Image 1: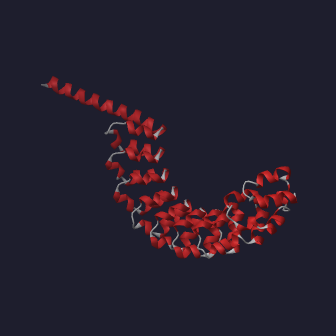
Image 2: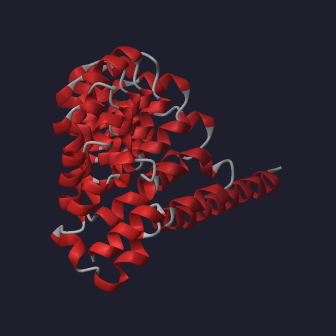
Image 3: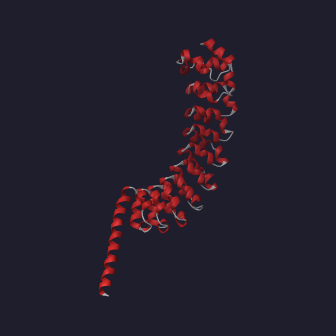
Length: 290
């Protein structure tokens, strides 16, 4: 009986030593590469020390932690601080934890999509998200997508975020101006009224000549305005996308444009280059002027 007892103790001791050895080895692995957690045993994926080391190295490996540890506040916080996307793998209760969500969106604004509805309507949380990535505005509540301060912060970070502002703010001059100065083609999302605003459109095409295609028809065919644009950007560079503009069929525009400094250097290749967008009759006129 005593002999059997000692045999059992030895077996237990051996098992414990094996586990400790496996744990030390796994701990070394996850500290170097968090993703090695996915190959660990279920028992080790439920070990706080190992999982905490893993998510500190790469937050996304929260995906491989046990359900119990995906609901562990300290571990989830460590994960989202390393990579905000890891919020996707936190269990529901923690998606409404303000500190965790705030840490996640500050690291990656897109993590806002995984937050609870309550926190997607939290001004501080959403402001942190759009300041990190303007496109996160799409995941904010409708109320905050109509909040001037938040939308302005979003378009300042990425002009294309104007696409997710509610209609009223697409007609706000300060917001639209900030958007097109950051990304000229954000003019596409401005109100019709502001796409006919000379200051707004000029700011847009100064940032990106292609933005002229989103201006109102009136400005697209305003000779003095398009000439001003051509002085900023080579008329040749911006026209492949705007063949439909009537102004390029206007001899008055052609006579003025050909003498712009940024076109004179084209020299012999001028006719060949411009022929990609001008109608034959106007091309003949232009070649006669060279």
